[in-house]
Length: 395
Ligand SMILES: [Zn+2]
Image (cartoon, rainbow, N blue to C red; front, side, top):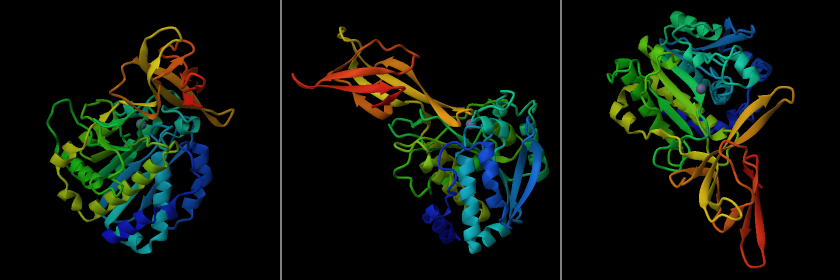
């Protein structure tokens, strides 16, 4: 069985759903593509609820085994790596009959792609009323979270996978490596005591993270066990359903997060295997706790040691972050740059970096302002070159 899983991962490129090339998957994109998945006879579709604006939320059921797994994606509407990976997972199951048969006898998996359809349609984190669904697990006011908890009540999953995307600024603690995939077995209370389910989810995460085939090159990290009383994962774990949070993250020269998408695909198939064979029991809490922590020491662009104005002698580093929003009328993602820090940023790194030594900025750069400025380099007595920083990108 392990060989079948390895085969699927080796041949990942064959299973990539072709129509989700960018980070953005709106609900319309999903609706347009879901017909391809509906043609798979081994999957069973069901409407489990509606969003505030009445968009259907689906569950997609696979298998008839006695070990139950629930996976939901895009609870935050602009975090689509999980959804993109699910389409790849469906393609891989469709193309691998032996694997499909084996997994379907051991597992029953309920996929819920795009739990927050209105947020996805706007390519925004929150739902149509600007409630963060991931802080609504206690009151359960939003229909999207009500749908999720109804499914949990009916299905009684043994394992839950809560799929998110994290911002580019997360790195693996103590390194300049982006955290391309991060895990958490959420806490169930503010005390330090680990519940059995929390420990078991840690064991599974140890199995997944230590078996990701791209491990040598890829930053793998974990979140802290800070307890969030209103968060989904924390509450579901407290209800006794083992819960694994997976956050897809950045990777250098990969603005569309194709690397994270592949890692999520692999993490899910590895999980299916470890759960189907009960091999997650071989994982250890100690190893989980040795996965390095997430840190926030990355900028999208970092300019080092640049003279801050033409006439001053003061030099500093400048850290720039780029954020995205979706403009529906233009049908495109807008990128907004912000100068996040100025000073000694020697403990930080950048996805892109400029050595500003021997250079100066032509006008003063302000904190929290848009990153639009020129850096003039005096390379030789006769030659002057310029780097233009426009909306956070060097040109
Ligand atoms: Zn999220």
